[in-house]
Amino acid sequence: MVVVPGERIHVRGSSRVTILIILVNVLVYFYTSYPNLFLESTNESIYLLGFTPATLFTNPLQGVARIFTAMFTHAGLFHIFFNMYFLWLFGRRVESIIGSWRYLLLYLTSGIAAVLFHVAIIPVGGYDSLVVPAVGASGAISGVLGSYLLMFPNTRLMWCMSFLFLPYCFPVSTSVFLLIWFAEQVLYGYLRLGGVAYFAHVGGFVAGIALTYIATKSIIEQYKSSYTYDYIYGWLEEIGIVFRRPRGLGKIAKTILTVLLLLVAAGFAYGLYFINTTPPLTYLLNVSANGSNDTVSLVVYQGSVDVSYSSVDSVRILLNRLTPVLYNPSLANTSETYDKNYNVNIQGIRVPIHLRMNAVYDEVGVMRYGSGEMYTRVVNIDMYGNAVIGDAISIDFVLDSMRLNTVPFLSIGGVLALGITIYSVLSLRRADEIAMVTEEAPSLPYY
Image 1 (cartoon, rainbow, N blue to C red):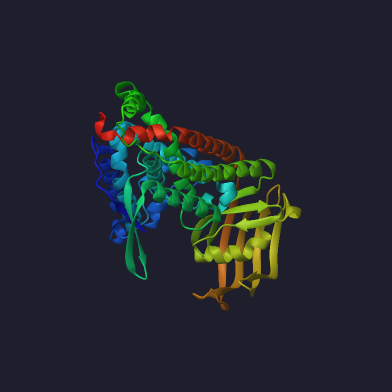
Image 2 (image 1 turned 135 degrees about the vertical axis):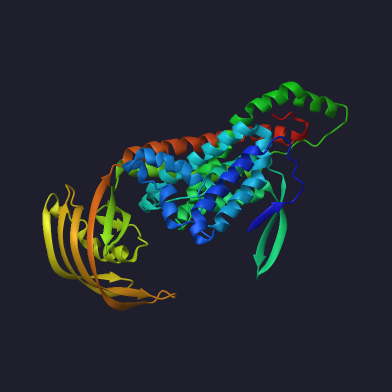
């Protein structure tokens, strides 16, 4: 899916901040991807510069710093290309209206809001997000898109897609394209489709809507006082001269956008209720297995244990088989020595395990420390999802867990995200005023 301008876009005033942001992103990408021939960033740079929510609990200063480094880090060539393309396409015109400094503030604040929404939705979207690094300028750029929607809802775009490997393009308005895009982000975010921080996009977009009226308020007041818009248009209409008034966002578009925003608000409201009534036990689990290391989340809720996915083979194999002994309330505040045989079911395959381990459990029965060795067999899964028992494997391991008190932080984040979303709904009442000014932009002074 690609969009291109469907009409000539007139940009007056400076675009220097947009150009500067693009330049910084490109330079950072060169640095993080040159070992991989600029095709993708290295895993080390993703983990070093990406935002991992767990760092806000383990190292708050580093977590805050990562909010900003992640904004300028991209995973791959297509990732940075399309992000910078959208920023260039939409950002220059927004900057030309509100000015460079306000535009920079809008961009950075939207990026921060993107992180806030990404973290605040964890009780609904899943605690595995705690340990997954997020990178990209998408959240901040989404704020620019939200602002553009209110400023230029009727700008024509060409929406291009492929059908049977053939390109097909058709004209749409900005409001149609961005409403469909935003609806996808909300839907995919609630469906928990992997690989993309959809609620970061939602957060940036919502912040852009909420901030646009603030950013354009003085321009609107100047327009009203200097151009006496309503008086002049009313007088001309009385004598029979009728001009096309700026149409603004339109009632249908406002209604759809309001419904989507209320769906977002409902998610945060439910998350706040959930974590303050039946909060789960949340842990970080640091694992070393056959010399390979990884950190995963471990969540205990109503007696069930959920361990997040590990991309490290030996760690993933170990945890898939160790889950039955990671939590046992009857062993709270005790030590246990295991030398036992048991079986687990993986993809419908009964997998044998022999475990030798020394373990220490905390006050609620979650394993605080464990070390030993496991003898088991791997499960091979083909591209069609068929599973068969594989070779025998031995895993030497050490693990330790750290409990996180996520309730206060997630509660504050949820309240802030809910407040921003509600404010954005209220800001839609001013959408026509914003469009009134920006659609008449050629007659306005720029600064």
